[in-house]
Image (cartoon, rainbow, N blue to C red; front, side, top):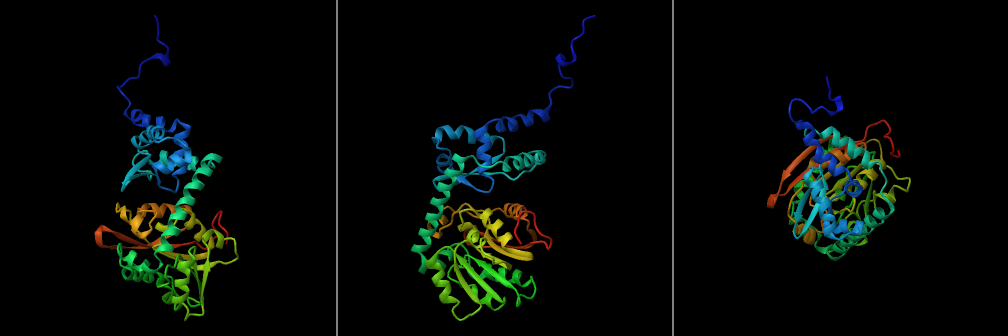
Length: 337
């Protein structure tokens, strides 16, 4: 009797739906360029033109790869005005563990030299655009911000969460991006010392004038990365509607966690994700808000624990998230104490 080798026998029980569902995922992952795109989108949302700049490719050549990544549910596309932006999808569904594992391994790989250089060019252009906006709108900063959200509403919520951190009278506090310094008096009345950190000298001049009556406030030019090179460390940090103006919000969060002493707190007020593209031009926004889940994931990656959150509805469909994060008392791996 002739027998068919086991390896040659057809599968029983019909088609394997699980395997069929996984096929697009593994097809998408089976290309070096697509893996590099996913690595680049680790903590960033990039437009088609920015991706073309990074990889020095024509849009027609890149679009094919982006389409495959979208179809496999690894990235999503979003139109913002005339531009289309791509970002990585947070793992969900039955394949979440697999996708999360894949992302973890991809993220452990350093960017190749060409991609790193291209990303540096993109970030430099973003930073230039942001600084140019603030230099030209110093005297209209509050007016521009009020187009999106009421400063009073989200600031009161931020102070409410700040007061949950306990008595700050002997503690040091860092405000990242103080803008015109409107929040500094309230912070100075709560903390022993306050450092106001801003990368715009024009905005910092406004902050100095606003806080001139408070001897415990120091205004410092720079960003979180440069501050990290000093010996300054803080018990509390506040970022009040700042992250959506930064080139690399994940890096800012990482730096902030490292600037905290163990047991420290971070208060963040931020826009929830929205589709009002006009905010880029009129408010200097580099990001159109963030999904609350995305901020939670980023904070966790930086060793911060989410402890409280408030959500405030605003005009034009905007929503503000005000979050309180805690750095555990035990030292965090990879962070300087």
